[in-house]
Length: 257
Ligand SMILES: Nc1ncnc2c1ncn2[C@@H]1O[C@H](COP(=O)(O)OP(=O)(O)OP(=O)(O)O)[C@@H](O)[C@H]1O
Ligand SMILES: [Mg+2]
Image (cartoon, rainbow, N blue to C red; front, side):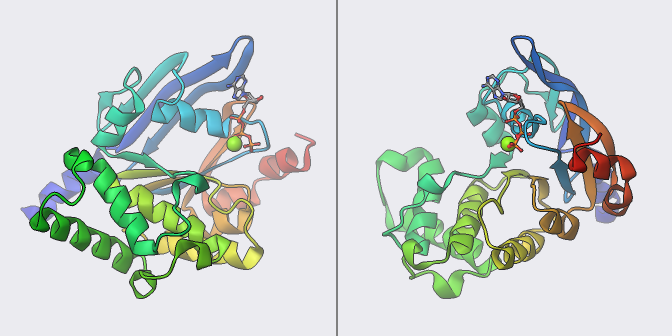
C-alpha cells in the first residue's frame, strides 16, 4: 500500500513549465519552454552565453514576471506569485556568495539561515527548546552534506569551492523539494568543480535539482537529462548520453549552429 502510494506520488511533477516565455522589449529571451521535473530528477540546462538560462530561472523563481506561459509547482500555477510564496511551497535557489558570513563558523552560518526562515526570527534564541530544534536541524544538514566535522571552522578558512558548497547547504535550510542552481562551478578550479559534482551527487536523492552549468564535465557527471537552450528556445533535450553525442549541440557550442 505504501509502495503503491509512493508510486502514484512520483508520477506528479514537482515543477512543470508550459510554453514559458519572457521578452525584454523586442528581445525574446525565453521562448515557449516546456519542462517537467519529477522528485529526485537531476536535470541540466545548457546553452551558450545569452541563451536565456538565467532569465528562465528568474521567471521560474518569480524574480522576473513571465510574459506568457505557465509555471506549475506541485500542479499549482504560481506564475503570478512572489518568490517567497514559491519558496514556501518548496522551491529554492542558491544564495550568492555575499550571503555567507566569512568570520562566522560553518555551524553559525547554517544556524542563522535556519533561524532566518522561522517566524520567531526577531526574537533570537527565544527558548532553549527552539534553540535545540534549530541546532538539531543544522547538525542534520551538515552531517548529510559531509560537513559536520568542520562545523567549527570559520567560513573564510574554507576553500572557494567549499564555500560554494556551504551556500548550497544554506539553500537546503528551507527543506526545498526542488533546488535551482545557476552555475555552481563558476570560477572554480577543475579539481574544485569535480568536488562540486561529487557534492551535488551526494545530496538527498529525493530532492529534484535543476542545474545551469557551463562546465561540461560537471554537467555530464551530474545530470541524467539535459535541455539545450539556444536563443531562448529548447532546441534539443534528452538523456545525457544522447546530448553528449548530438552533432547539433556540438555545432551550437562551436558557434557554427
Ligand atoms: N533584465 C534584463 N533586461 C534586458 N535584457 C536582459 C535582461 N536580462 C537578460 N537580458 C538579455 O536576455 C538574454 C538572455 O540572458 P541570460 O542572462 O538569461 O543568458 P544566460 O543563458 O544566462 O547567459 P550566461 O551563460 O552568459 O549566463 C541576453 O540577450 C541578455 O542580454
Ligand atoms: Mg546566466
